Image (cartoon, one colour):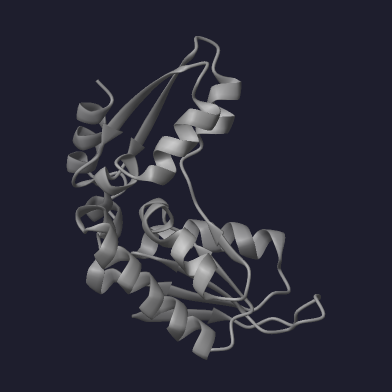
Length: 181
């Protein structure tokens, strides 16, 4: 596990850090947004690159790993956890919330804002197999995807490209083009 701490004085009464984790480096974008919104908060980030990608793992494997990371962050005195990964949220968020007495925030595909913004009644969701097969995603579609056509695409291999930092690499762009046909 790799962890990163951005030490700043907290403006909230509880100056313990907020723990943020993802299956790899993709969650750093979430970390940056949290930092922009809460610049005086101390943030701890865990990039679980050793077990990435989560999308190819079973929900039980993902949940077990999320508990290990949550325990690690709580041992570092985290006052809240942010699961900065759609797949981890889908697999483990309910179990984490039942097990721990602290705020736990998860990520999910942006079906609601996409459905509200759609001009033609069609939206697309690119995600891991694990996210698309999850009960969480099914519930999200049931709640917010009823009035639009939702086209889903599992993006095998895309997480690995992101983890390698190949955002604009030719192979990454080919994968995206293939998935968006």
